[in-house]
Length: 390
Ligand SMILES: [Zn+2]
Image (cartoon, rainbow, N blue to C red):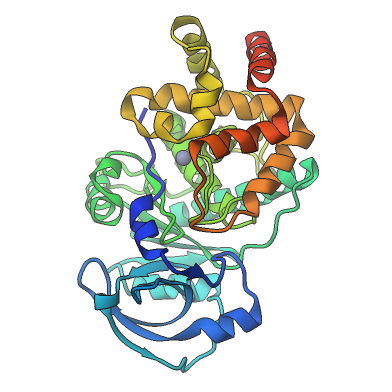
């Protein structure tokens, strides 16, 4: 199972910029703050391309480096020597609509067409029926996802920026773009969510070697039946995107990976046919449960919960990732089912964290124990409960 990389920039790179103070949270839109911090910027991006845009300053580092956010929600890291010009804003900073964002992105990808709903913009060189099918899936997922957490007690908010998906028709096109955008590690996966760009990047899962596109929803769904693992990845990445845009997580803040991945795996079970909802939301994720039980029997150490929580290593190291993802799903499932009020309390605590403020591993564990109590006792309950699941 491939590991999905979420961000193309390392924490160290962010920290290098973050020597200064944070001005604005990337997910908030306070008018006064934004007005004060916005301007017209010209800079060279990390691929030596000159970019010119109306943007707002999220962070200004002591050395003059900037963390900028464009009106499409995208975040740019601008070292001092790459900033070419800074002037008063010619247009007021206002988030683009999904349709505007889609149109803007088609200028970046030759031959791509954009389709949009109120929340989503999808840019693709795949077929129009597939584009609409994906948009339908994302909309249903976003609605069900928000309703789920609202009902559990976490009040989600409307996304401030449009939710963008870029869908490549061919695997080779996807791999080429992904390598430059997010690194060679992601070239082989079916898709990823990028924290800096706020986009999900996917490939057409119905693409066939004959080149004949699927023309109807029935044909699309028929082809996807044989690619359910890849559909799960697509749903997984779309779940990350909506979670980072509805108030649950904050881009560039400390979001424990077990929590973000636990949430994405909690929702990733595909629901292809339901037109009205997302019937598999919160159901047992069979593949993850199977893996967790095997881990439990064969090699789970006594301090497993602690290592999962204290840092992200178990999920980012290829050797331990599969077990780490399975345990993240299992822990999320257990907490939602058995400690919903505490889990919501923990989510709320994490959601209010300031970007670029990273705790020590000890602080991570302490924050968790503040809500859920002693780890050893919780571990006993957790394992006992998971063993009852079939
Ligand atoms: Zn993920």
